Image 1 (cartoon, one colour):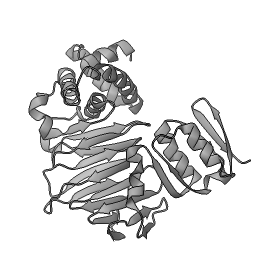
Image 2: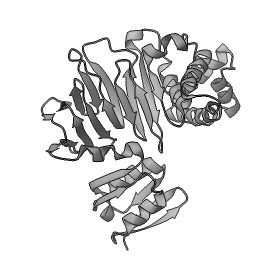
Image 3: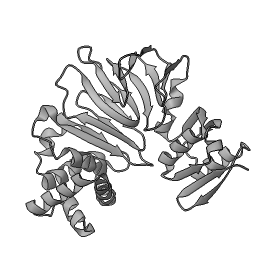
Image 4: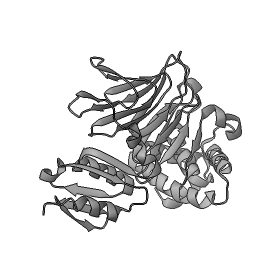
Length: 323
């Protein structure tokens, strides 16, 4: 689809027929939505410079209202959700609503939204029950407009830190692919990217972790760590410093006992690059601690100084190889 038409869609200047054509095009393929998101980022970043943080959120709602035909943003902002992002609140909010708009408001109790966080960025979401979720790069969160059933359930792919509002009558459930995390009100970090081990670190309170088939269950206490492996094993480790798992929130990295492939995956998401590793190197274990100011070049140099591999860069791609 033409860039000019997509920009008019973002600005809310298309006719009703043209707007529906764009929505149909978005529903056809994820790459279409990614393209619109890129344009929305650029447009949103330029526009938000004129606004305060509160005004950015109102501005995003007003643009969505004009182009998707939603109800008044001021009337429903608190009921649905508030989204705060340090670099582009309007952009994230608009994109999250694009996917949900195809069935939004048909039945408020069943309305779901999707929030996608691109590589190199973070976002924070405040749900209608007061639960705050911080999302790391390359993450996806599916969540409802309101919690009307017996459970408060969301779906996560990626990494997030949860500060769950207490509600003993309505457990909060994080649905990972193959694993459920059930809490009443607590703080914990989850890393659950596709084709990688899942990691759950409990900061405070209590958490029940259960495999999808219900055969394995673990009750965690603070500073416990659970690993759900790619071959479906549930491993528990006690007395782990849970704060280490939160370093990503301030831009740093504390990586202990991870393979070079796992570390490369983290660097790919943090710096928006592609890293290639030889099979013999991918299983090598590393421990490293990077602060929030470290650049990609510095991180690569420090890793390679372990003496176990070298690297070369080619554009946006990086190659690790044996010496």
